[in-house]
Length: 505
Image (cartoon, rainbow, N blue to C red; front, top):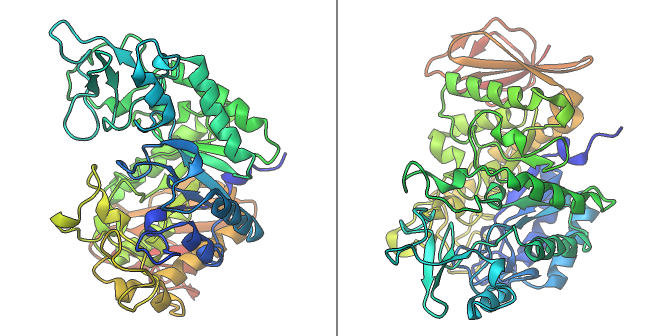
């Protein structure tokens, strides 16, 4: 039986507004991505994930979808999308899209109809409830953004509607069979156009407690950690749609759960999600014990029930969190983190710009646009060292402080650059069955060092990372195949602070 493509893939996340500007208006678009497809393929990744590109009023920059089956004009057209799909496939890349199933835009035709009357045929496509006895919201749930109730009162119909995020993002009612069918059809629309899969936004939220009871711990309890059993039935229905296509499309879910085994449960017995993001690595501090526990926990959860087909993911940066270069505070740590990410027994997700070593951009108060305070990690990619950095001006967000130094054209021919390191690591991973799919076993070489082996038959590599502030001696031998500081030399048993090495045993 052949290995599913997504199990051995490295996926490259693109935040379209900030990736590349094809028409010179200062906002990234599909034309810009098409132009950069050779660059993406040249990195050595296997697939891309595009953050939302669907029609949207952009209250949450595309996560408020007004039409699931069209492209927002800021990014281009459906023809541009078809061109991008063809370009990716021609370069051996798969392409996946961000699908937002929990909520739509308040401007979506479905919600406009639902809001028009209590007698609307689409009234129950969204979650409407009468006011509480005191006239306030139906329960104590709070929205993720804005320090507000998760309910907005509609004067026209005299009821509240639910929105776990912004008021402009009303929650869909997945218990209604017509909603489920309509959302399945949006998947089919893109699968018919050759899309290879989806990232499902906050997928654990689609099945909510039908009774909508108050949270027992009061309004401070995070609503994003909803874990309702009905969601699993809904996921099985989604999986049936994906499995009906011969090109093996996949879905990775954003599952905001953190208790042991919870994320893996959303894979079902191989009949729900193919992958689920595991965010424990994102929240691990640069500390040996934190990373050792995180690696062990992620591997344990995926191996606990191998018959379920569970396979982990590894994520250090994305569009919702400060970049790991920013969190860790140094280029040396970011270089070591690249080695950590690309040697895990998991499907790594890389965030565009991390291969350039980008930190977050400083955002002055007058430039803030995101309701969730995430602008810094969404700054435009600097392609060139000149003043415009390959973009039209003004750009929708400022560049990082050292954009001229970190620009892709400045790193392109520098063998010591972060970009060159990522390319070599991705080539090594592609050439090694041990790194793509072999076993992973942690072993002890000291308190400040995290070390593990990757094995597949005769292909064996050892990885060691010094998280300490001082150099250490470790009882390891071999040849340094790749490292954050050195490569292609015999290993002398010494690790500098924040140094990582990959040894051929």
